[in-house]
Amino acid sequence: MRNKPWAIDYLQSNNHIVDVNSTYSKKIKEFFSTDQPLHIEVGTGMGTFITTLAQRNPDINYVGIELDKNVLIRVTEKVLELGLTNVRLLLLDANTLMDYFNEDEVDKVYLNFSDPWPKNRHAKRRLTHSNFLTSYKQLLKQDSIVEFKTDNRGLFEFSLMSMNAFGMKFENLDLDVHDDEHEDNIRTEYEEKFSQRGHKIYWIQASF
Image (cartoon, rainbow, N blue to C red; front, side, top):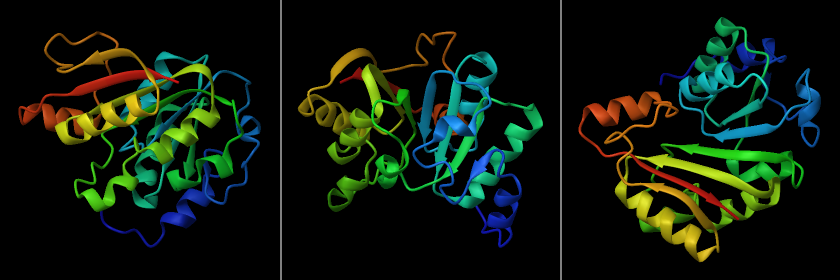
């Protein structure tokens, strides 16, 4: 996506939806008008997944976390267009999750089509590396779920091994989501694109 020089100004002008400066760090509940269960998506893509979830579940608060300010503009536009009051967005590096959230504060984490970082030397950047799993375990309430989807077989296999080594419990596992697609599955923009190319979609639900 092309760089938009005005991106930060736009996001800051919508600070009732987007937290650019960690204003709500350690007090995310104050960012919402209603105190409800809290789910987060790490890496929003263009926002189809989180906005669709929010429409279907008005009794849950959703936080979308994205590092790319240009991408976050698209998500913000969708939230505004749909008039969603249960979605808030953070311009935030996933490496700093525990600097922002409190322990035992989140009810579910979604990871959708994360960058696979295929080179071995970049393994620590994968969002299912043990470093990130440590953060998820801290911020999640007991027995809460991490839900992960990818079309990348290498990342899927890495994630299985990483989660298993971390001692996580696999609640659900699907090696081809679209073979017998569940009605609750929300296709992200990337999911549609990869599926049209004939890629299998892999899915994991795991708890600590």
